[in-house]
Amino acid sequence: MNTKISSTVQRAIKIINHLNETPGPQGIKDISEKLDISPPITHRMLTTLKLEGLVFQDSVSKKYSLGTVFIDYANKIITDIPFISLIDSQLIDLRDETQETVGFYMLTSMIRMCVIEHVSNQEISRKAGVGNRIPLHLGSSGRVILAFLNGDLQAQVLNILPEEERNSLQKKLKTIENIGYSINEEELTKNVAALSAPIFGAKGKVIGAISVSGPVFRWNKETMEQYIPILLKTTENISKSLY
Image (cartoon, rainbow, N blue to C red):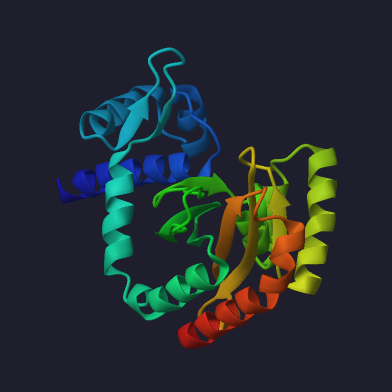
């Protein structure tokens, strides 16, 4: 009996992990084949997970993705992370120095998630939102994380991209490795630009990124220039505190 219960829980965890690690919604057949779980059992597991809010099923495509309950879980984890209180004051200082929105993005699986955000006090400001999840290959924060990931993990992200996009991104990642930061203008959101640098944790492994973002009429490549040393000093100090 205990073995059966353990097996059921393991299958549920495998399905949740698969939905978390695989880009885009997934159908029952895809999940079944990938995880080597029979379609009837896969369907039964997904139905149960759906009832509990752990997965969401699109009414049109009938495909599944992670449920919004994981945003609540993420917020709880974020609140309980001990080092958040240690770095928060430095992020506020960076926000006040640049007068733009400062966000801390953490690496989670193959995406980055906004875990802290201090919005600019200016009337027109940028707001991404805590809990916002973005693929690593998009945006300046994703790229600075991706640039410093170990080879195998970086390859996993790059290999899902079309060849032309992959080749272009690899060149950008080489540049980021050399200069230590990344800039984007209107790449993800119209009229928004961002400057980002990586954060390193135990054993020097990249764990996230700090991003300073704002409206492109005020925050752009030219105006960012003077704040690059300040951002790099902040990320260096934070990384040292996490070693």
